[in-house]
Image (cartoon, rainbow, N blue to C red; front, side, top):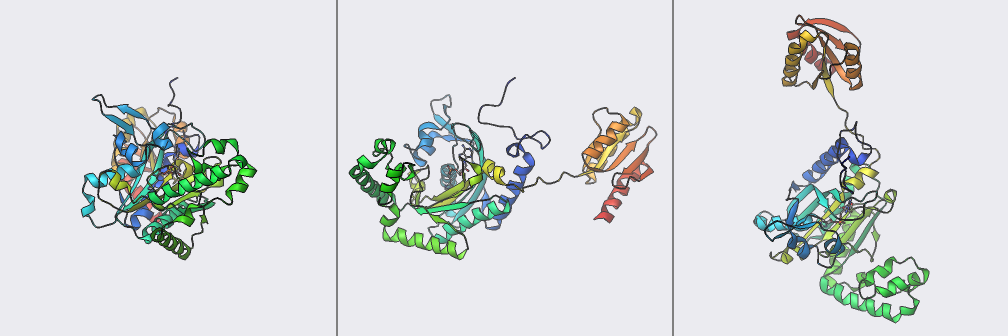
Length: 423
Ligand code: HAM
């Protein structure tokens, strides 16, 4: 049998889904809560295409990142142009911001999205090749309030979904220049302690000195306690910006851990970076994260424009949103058939009931009357109209069991009256 490609999954009605990631109804709840929380703060929805010119990511995310080096689905459009299925949303949103001259709008331009993204990673729990993100981007403000407000909005979204977030890691990366100088300093430090470092760390001094902070090896960890930290090297303006972000988060009652080793997998970050994690998720513990990207719009040929944002993985939120019950499905009326000769009446009754605003389902499977009543009960129908062959209908209230004989034209008013008195 043909299967969905590895690392992808189908989104299904609850009855067919085998896990929360596949359930349509829970996703809808995520969407509704994101819309409510972000909409209330003035964020407006944006959708960009599922693929972009490869350049958008090569330049935006960075040639040297794992995403661009190993994880992109890139193909030729048939005319010699290279396209890529979007691995993330920030660079495309900035591309759209520039293309549509949005800098003439009131700043900052606040946008949010709920879209699919694609990364050729090894699939495991919480990691897929096609996945969804809710993201928010505020373009055109360098105010620390913007960073703090966005972090609070993500915390609010996680809380509204009942997603346990154990940690918020927070740091500042300063400017690319500060970072480049710091990198040299760190490399020199590591070389000076080379014989005390684990072999894998030693081998990666030139390539990725920051990884040394993540090493499990005890001797390496001891060395790294005295290693220079980027946070101590920030230029005064960047340090001041970060101090303000922190005090605003304190003010908002958001607890965080300063983590000077927080490196995110995208090159466009400047100043603030952050990540919410959940221990429940195991290896793929990152629920969502983001930061400031003051240089990205310029990399995409725009004018210097400060911006900040985040994205959170929908599947990871669903996996840890324990109490996110899918909204109950409502069925006001089930139209059942006692005699085959009544089928046209039944068909018309169902159409009219829907036009009158009732959630109505019609018997379509040729079940026995007993089977129909059983099915109506299973789907939680409040009323069943059993249509005979002479235009007469018997209306059964599934709650009370009471059954009344009516003419067809009286069925809908009777249900509407019943609904009215119940409400
Ligand atoms: P990111 O950290 O690469 O950031 O992804 C954000 C979130 O997407 C992750 O925390 C994770 O929950 C989810 N995610 C990433 N890869 C996968 C995957 N293969 N399967 C399932 N979930 C995944 C960004 O993408 C930035 N664009 C965020 C941002 C917005 N920064 C500024 N603005």
